[in-house]
Image (cartoon, rainbow, N blue to C red; front, top):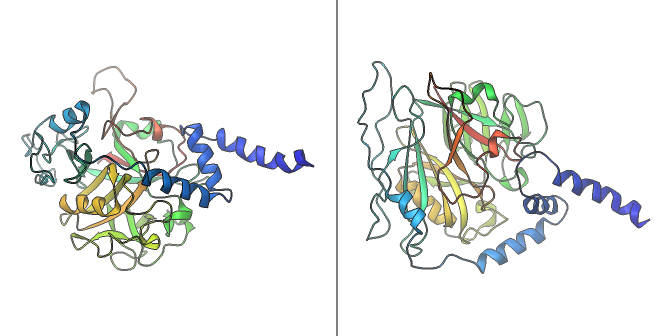
Length: 367
């Protein structure tokens, strides 16, 4: 009787451990527990652990992080633009939080492979508050005039098969692949829906923070039902909680411990790896990520980088990632993609989205 009762459990757990993707066995085990009636236990353990392992106050970043902050210089577009190519002006520097700023802190430099000889993305690095001065957060600025976005479904999130775009990112499109970054929470935790080319996993919730992609590959961020509604032009929409930046400012109450708005799994005040995406008045995208962030500090970081609307994406060390890709130049022998992490201490494998990943993502391609 015991064997009969435990056999389905063993079968389910074995499938979780041997499923597609590069997730570590520990992550697969935790996700299996979360999906099999132990979500409460995982949440309690995570909150206890993170609450008792908060980042230290003061200090300076490690040598490797200092080198990433100071590498390069502020670029104002010192390149010869081809005629009739439309692009946005490079972003303005981001004001550091710490008075004695590191060299290069808050200054943007070109990121990844140019498009038509023009930088399509920029990156900058800065400490995310004036207290935890050994931490470094990263910002990526993306020009939608030169970049188009595609949502890719993961094996577990949203799950299922037959999606128009499903991971891994196919070999055929990798020559134009510039970058890819993590999407939102697991669907059961996101308080929102998922839509892709006419197919829903969960209905889109009015008032939810949403990133959507139109038929021209333009990605935008806003509140569903106010900034955007369903139309034939919408090909992809992914929701995650509520907006954390609106009108260019962190939303009221972002400091409050409201699990309905800011997530049931880890308290919004607990400082962990977090990520978010926003849009500037000119339409540029801004991605932010780093360790030791609360929802409030993430919102302030995106707002300071120029976002007028922004939402939180996934959190925790296993799920926050932003990769850039480059291949051999024309005329050179073909080579595998070179993958670079936006922030050197991001934990996920660089090949996360080049294999059958469990989580969905957003991929960016040169136009």
